[in-house]
Length: 457
Image 1 (cartoon, rainbow, N blue to C red):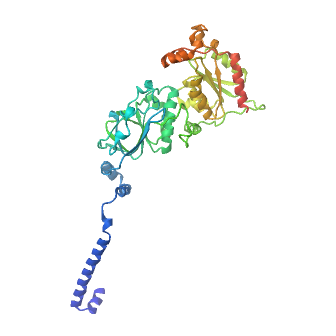
Image 2 (image 1 turned 45 degrees about the vertical axis):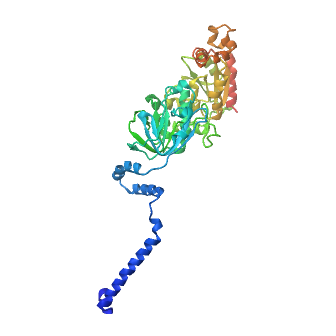
Image 3 (image 1 turned 120 degrees about the horizontal axis):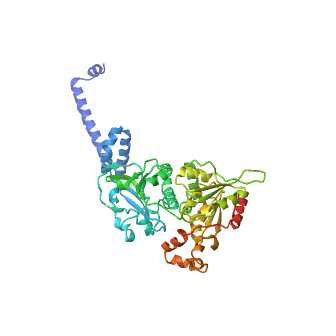
């Protein structure tokens, strides 16, 4: 109908002229548009390429994404950045962003497009051992060292979330070192990712990952990777090598303003489903007994007269639980959390104080040897950071098994610091590995009475 009307309105010659004019007009308009927008038709910026790649990948089906994931990692180049902290007394750690690759069985981290010489100099030029006990040769001799390279090997596995590389070598296996060297530093380092992070474990031990399975699963949504056994190249958008540690069994709120030991305690309470938030508050009208947990030791620094101590505590109306610390944290944490007072001789078993309810009383028995500074650093100060009430009991010469080996005027009693000067091995041998405790029950009674008073406050 339209063609019929058009034909009646114009002659055939006029129609041809109008058609040619329209064609020429379209060419002129197209030329103007191309000239005007020419600056915008240059190469697409890298950032836009990356954004477009992400949007495109979201629209792909799973099969297409799988086929292209290795290709996309090679095509898109992101400048790498490294920020390292070598000033902390307890640990060295680096945070890397960009195109970060790692081959585990060669302990090599590949950081392309970055001048490594500007960052890694002096003692750190050979790499980093990712275990949070800096300067301790005894611990670090069993820790793998990771070196850096500017090479760009092809990726065999691509990951979309960051990675944290850390070792569970060193002194891991000792309950105190498990927490102070690994678990608490891992909490500080990884908590900000809210689970969206992968753990790459160096010097992995099956028993350790079994013991702390709940902690690992709570901090990461992904199965941990035994990086030592990986001969392929894993590629990540960012990576942290090493763990941030502040001090023994503690968190410095000035260095980590968003986390504290109170936060860590709440994390453990949630992870292990601990029921009690607060210890008992004793009132005269109530007949409920406070529970006292005595941490038993069998090999070193053992309480020789445990049963006399139990009977005395029961006369003070304590419900007494006498147990040796257990590696099954799911079960033992419940026992500790059910108690209002925990006591024991200085040693790794006391680390279980992290499971006590708030306002509970923690009693540390300090053997001979000038161990006050060690006791305060390892357990005294940390317990206060966890809202616990702290008491300490310093034994006398007659309460130590050393009295059976040395006369009272011996240097072991008179000048423990001279033993310290000989080195840690000699000091440990005398005061830690070869000393047991026989409490003066009558003298110790006043400490338990003070614990009862604290529970009534």
